[in-house]
Amino acid sequence: MFIILWGVNLMIKKKNKREVYALGQHVCMSAYKARRVVDQIRGRSYEQALMILELMSYRACYPIFKLVYSAAANARHNMGFNEADLVISKAQVNQGTTVKKLKPRARGRGYPIKRSTCHITIVLQNTAPLILYKEYSFI
Image 1 (cartoon, rainbow, N blue to C red):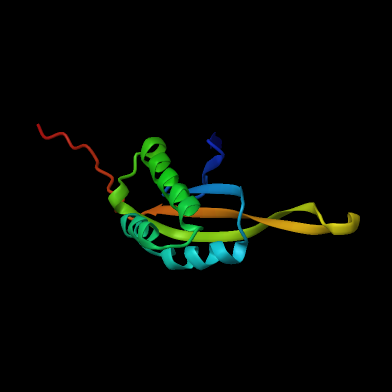
Image 2: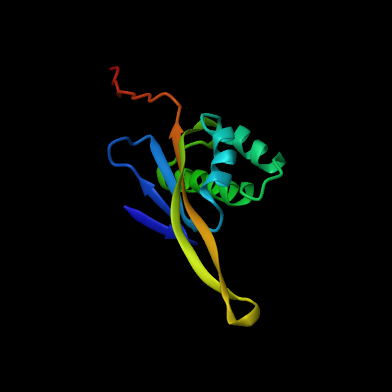
């Protein structure tokens, strides 16, 4: 099941009904710089991760902040999860395509410019206990 919202794919895993993940593709920054930020929020709660991302002074924080916020909003809307119970169970950054351009230089030469991109995946897991109530009728 794929839902595309403003360039962010929300995918609901069929195996585990307690996990939701958001995927941001072709984010214009190197994977190494994005991994530096993602390593700080992996395994933390949703609210704590948002606070860390707001206070860090890296350029990679804003797209990751948007991904985490979007995944939590979609988890609340589509799955009915409470935001206080969400934990970032998995966060990974993969290398994307490299945009290659030529910059004109002196004497008709061209210097290559390589602009790297990355794909960021954030997996949120609901930690609230599953309580199944059975209806009993007392007569």
